[in-house]
Length: 54
Image (tube, rainbow, N blue to C red; front, top):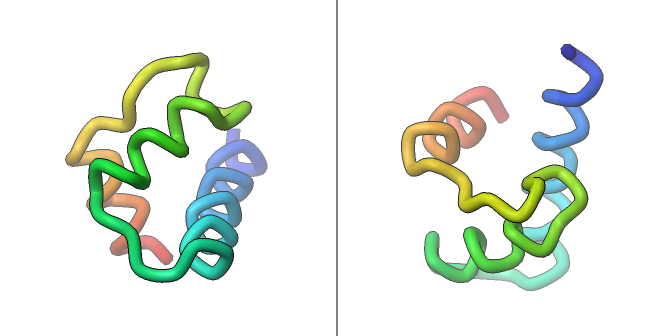
């Protein structure tokens, strides 16, 4: 579980470094196409938790 969570943090950091400044909607679109999402959108609260943890 911790490894999966860490990988999600890495995905978010890598995405922001790769694309630069993104809106929350753009991040969510990229998230839905990632291997971590199972095709589901990222909840706003989840995003905020990830952001704060990073």
